[in-house]
Structures are given as structure tokens and as C-alpha cells.
Image 1 (cartoon, one colour):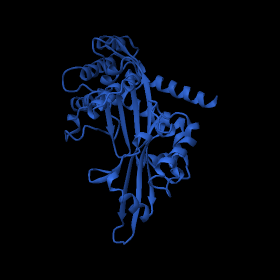
Image 2: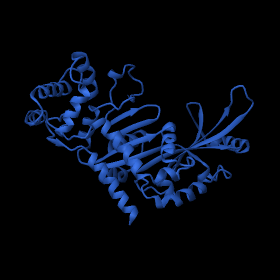
Image 3: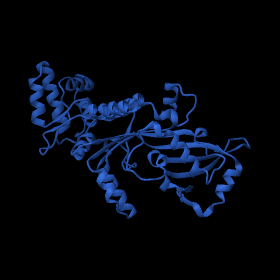
Image 4: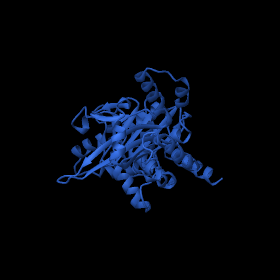
Length: 358
């Protein structure tokens, strides 16, 4: 349910200078000093910095830490799992104090750190991971978001998702849906190590991850009326986490199941929707699934609005697809049917809620 969190805390000048003195511990990335010595225990990154206020002699020293919650709460032992059990919160605080205290003995109380980012995650097991990724890559684009392709293309309509993933971002949120096996395989190859157990555990896993950045964690704090941004407040909000994950997924996939092109066309024709609207839906189906450079819902919308500026609103057409339970993204010939995963996400959280009550 929760994978990673980024925490921040103001530290004293003495603490700053002490860590800075540990030159041999630092690695530099993008001109910033990082300490990765505690990564095997679940504190994957420690970064110190200073901020000088404009037109003021005031200097603020602070430290950022990135933690893998499951690993840290398990005293650094790798179990290839997510942090799902809030009863482990006490262990999380205990081991954070144990390990970060090596470098920051006066800032080792996790309750004093603010949550700057938190990654909410669901792993869905399915043998059709690749088919789901391909369908999602051709889905809708969440409002206000852009495809994260490392800025390889300036124009949004020219951007492409990377193999094995669907990634959108804006200033508050990053949505990342990916093939966990392929991601682990690439990481192992990049870092030149082999972990067969890790690969086996990630087989047939579709990971849906929503990274809540600073403004999003501020929004959650205000919405849930937290007194502060202590991490424990963000761990037990199952209903809110489910809402965030489900909303991210359905903004891309909608709510309907996937079919072959011919079957989707049949279901449109068999529906009780009036003939004129059926004809428009069939045209949109062809636009999304043809070879006109519009093989995604959001690109088809751009083209549709150019072709039919006075036609039925594209959003209205998508609502008609939802009404008859047909996703406008159709499947390749080797896959006959693909379920929408909205129900699976709901089941995941229902199971999680039940386990916390027993």
C-alpha cells in the first residue's frame, strides 16, 4: 500500500557541519551531496542542504531522507513487500531512530520530521500485465497532466510512454503504472546484479503507484485536518488512499472492460442508444483504433474536435461507452477480453480493511 516516503526536517548548524565532515560517505548527484550508506536498512537517501533567505542573513539548515517503509520497519530485512500493516508503525519509528541516529543523534525522532512526499501503491496480480500496459498507454490522459518521457519531445502530442510503463505527472502528483517484473529486470541489469527471488516475486505484477508530492501532501493534510505532517497521519487513511489510487487509474482507463474491435462494434450496435449516436461512437472507435496517428483516447479527442467542432462533445461520447460497458480502446488479436481493474483495486482495499479489523 505504501512504498516510499520523503521526509524533511530542519537541523542545527552543528549537525549540518558534522554530516558535512563525513566526506568519505558522500556521493554527488546533480551537484548535491547524498549519503546512501543506510540504503540496505531502508533509509535509501540522506541529503543535507542550506537555505539562505533573500535579503536576510538568516541561514536555515535542513535534511531530507527517503525511506522504504516496509524494509525499514523490518529492521532492514528484504521481504519484497509493501508497507500495509499500520501495526508496524511503532517499528518504523524505532528503526528510523536506530539508523538515522548514527548521523543525526539529535534529529532521530521520526515524529519531528515532516512528510514531503509519499508513494501510495497497489500491486495487482495478473498474467496479462503486458496487455494492460498496452491498453493503458492508449487510454485517456488525466487532466492537467503530461506524459513523463524525460522531455524527449517538446510537444505533448508527440510524446510516447516508455516500454512497460504508463507515467503522467504534474506539480502535485506522479502517476506511474508499470510491469514490475520488467522494471526489476532492467534495474538488475543496470546495477549488474541478479536476484532470482526478487524476479519471481515480481512476476505477473502490475504496479499502480501514485506519488503524492509536496502540494498533494499539503492537500491531504488540510482535507483530513491533520495537526502536522507527521508520517503516521498518512499511513492509516485507507479510504483516502483507495480514492487516490482508484481515481488515478480510472482517469486513464475509465470504468469499462476491454474487447476486440469487432466485439466492441457489435456491442455498440446491440445497445439501446439511438442510431445516430451509435454511428458517432463507431466513428470514434475507428478513430482511436485506426492508423491515423490517434491510437489513444486523448489523441483521438484532439483529432475529433478538429474534425467535428460542432459535434457531440467527446466527453459525452465517452460516457455512452461507459454506459454500455465498452472501453473505446480495443485489444490486439491475441487477447479477446481484458477486465477493467477498478474492481480489483476496490477488492484489494476491502481485504486490507478487513485484516485491520481482525
